[in-house]
Length: 198
Image 1 (cartoon, rainbow, N blue to C red):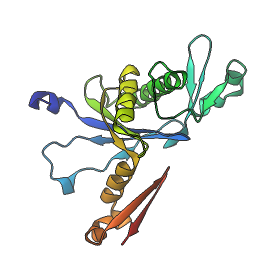
Image 2: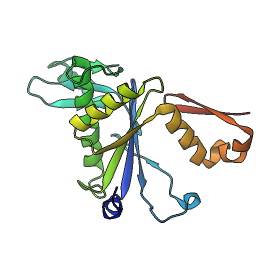
Image 3: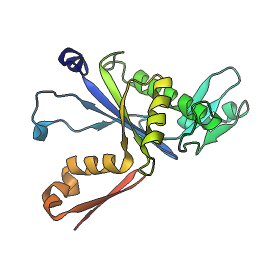
Image 4: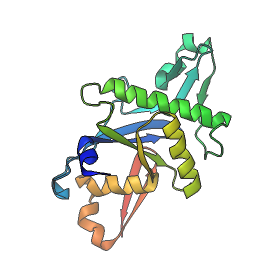
């Protein structure tokens, strides 16, 4: 990335489009700040002052989509079926499950933009998404392609286990920083991250 382009990026958004729940965090870019002085990532409101929302989507015949808790609204469910647990290793961007995931990605990103109008512009941020640790590189690349189709300003992908480690590493309450010289294992079990010090 060229220096002038780099300076335009003020925020990085990390999104975990989970099988059961979805969450996101935002971190300001502090290009000239020492690592130990960087601001931590902040969990984003996913609606209703909640930091997570169900990975659920209902798409009506007219094309309108409802995600999270709104996907379970009884009036909406009279018109269409709610889709849950649709995340899977992608195989074909034109596949039915992949199309649902692409639409879900789009709607999640749209919600993030709507909830953060005061700070996010069309060009001042990039997005990273997490994938299950078992997905191989071609599968991850296909997932990134799906994110591009969903209109996310995608910068890259990281495995959920790595994201959990980085989060634990920067969380002063985890004790990881004090004990890293002894060795640590981080388990990512959805919204819960456990650190085992060896």
